[in-house]
Image 1 (cartoon, rainbow, N blue to C red):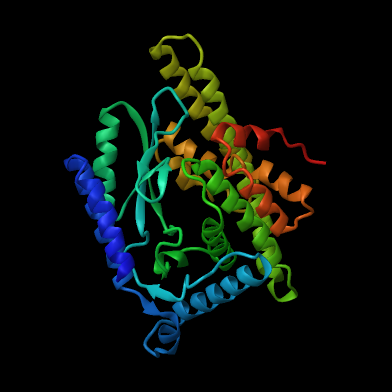
Image 2: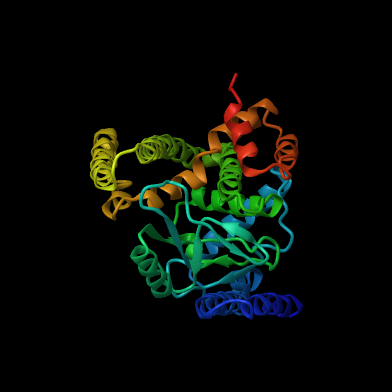
Length: 350
């Protein structure tokens, strides 16, 4: 209960200095987090319960295996994480609101006590996220609301396994565990892109090692194939995000920029259809393109992936020794964000 009380104290002291909107936001965050913590069940007890669905037990056993692998083979801190389970009422645990100015790919950021500044704002209820998104749209922002299956409290609490984790194939479930545990090892205040790209880099490296076993060959083959297509998809989106960035820096009037922006996003959709037409499942990312494309939505991919390639180069320079790689990344903690990003983009692969 001490951590619960500390959380309430920290947020309450912040709320007293803020307005009504901030009060509502922090109130839903506190109640949402406490609801999850209070709903936790020991995984040991869940596995021993004959009334629990076998699918849940299979997924929990996989997560336990992945967590042990993360500790022993990836040198990730596991502490008391993922020792409990929570059955949610929704397919997502939170809904994140992402925003960017209409003529900029620089994401809007929000700063919070404890966790620092982020390029998104999370809500435990979808209707609250949509309400805030509507407000931002009226202010002229491009906005995207995305359901999130997992998040990290960065060691403040013993994060549980959530039923929302299970909406993915086994290999990606293991990857999710590696990703979230990576945030326990490294988290730089105000640099969401680095934090998420680092976690994604460790996730990909961890999965490659986790699946390097004869019994997991089928999973590995599926992973390699899907990763190749996913990287093609991500690269295409980031290319168009960079094109939009150049467009916004031109001296054209807003009406001209808006028309060129619309045409560029239509071209992005067309290029994806061309890229994926020979895939066994050409509609794999169709759902992503079915909702409105804008700066905020393109930023969601850039946030998680734009520094992955440079970080993989750095990992290669350390002969894929994770301990050495972690040390090199942690050495950048006191750098400002621009220096950190510039350094990584300056790295050249052998």
